[in-house]
Image (cartoon, rainbow over all chains, first blue to last red; front, side, top):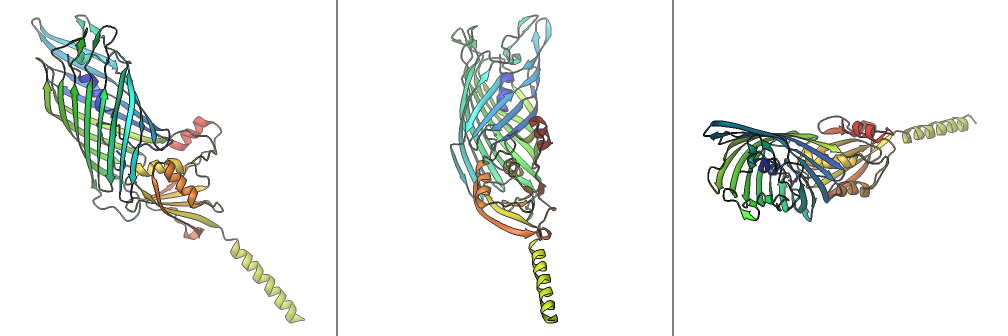
Length: 303
Length: 134
């Protein structure tokens, strides 16, 4: 059983400081105090073994203080798989919400200069089991690829870093998701993720002397995911675990109040243990991000 | 005697003119350099805090210079410290700030980068939030 469904959630949970922002991870997203950020994503994925999936993750971030930010990531989607059996092709599918991720980030270190900015921020939180790890069809339990959750409360922690100047920027994060055993004695393997992003402004080539132009930014991103083996009654499952490296290219249109991103994703490496594992062929990314001022008390002056 | 009356009238007229000159409304403008803001998104982080700055009417963002210009309503004063607090609360390190007094004709309320700052007044917090954001 593969774990594309949960991997897709992971792709969008992890975000940068000042230029645009990474599209495939949100951990480094800049969030000011009293700011609400909402990002709507659409992610179709095409894979071998007749798997097609569409995910609609929504990322929300709130600036509690200038250093503390709270994140909430929900995911919902649809997956369809065609399995070849001696009786002919078997069509399986599932839909529903995935696990809910909530985490807090603290900006531990920052250097703001007139021409550049740099930040390091650790983060910690958990995945809540709002997804389902026991979805069934008439033939029995659906393969893991079609399960929408891990079935347990999963601790999640990591660190993120971002550097930006007026022309280019870079962001990086590494996170770890611990998947404990569920009551049924099964668990997906723990997940180690590392993402890196490089972005450059491509329009306008030269900024005007005054004003705030809308920007077109090219973002190149890499996502590395290393999965430990699944556990069934404390025994490691042979056909599980592995290493995946993906490459993304995204164009981002950014304004004062919103940002729109469109991109493509290709797997560079899929080192998956076991036989007959489903591999991703390609993916698309579309997201729309809107910035809001959080509600505040009238006349409050507590800068 | 006529000369004395004439001089008196002239002095009163001059004084009135002086008063009239003093009564020309002026606005306060603050120009601040920001550190660490290189995108529209970065300026929005500041804008969120500007909503809470009483009397602020217009803000202008200059991306290339990482500079913020704030024009206040006539008669509303602001200090460098208040502007610094806005920037720090948004998570940025403030650069040099200049506060000056301008006549209305010198104030630029339109043009590239100028944004009108909303100050919703509804008593209902939900309506106030919608007025602020949409």
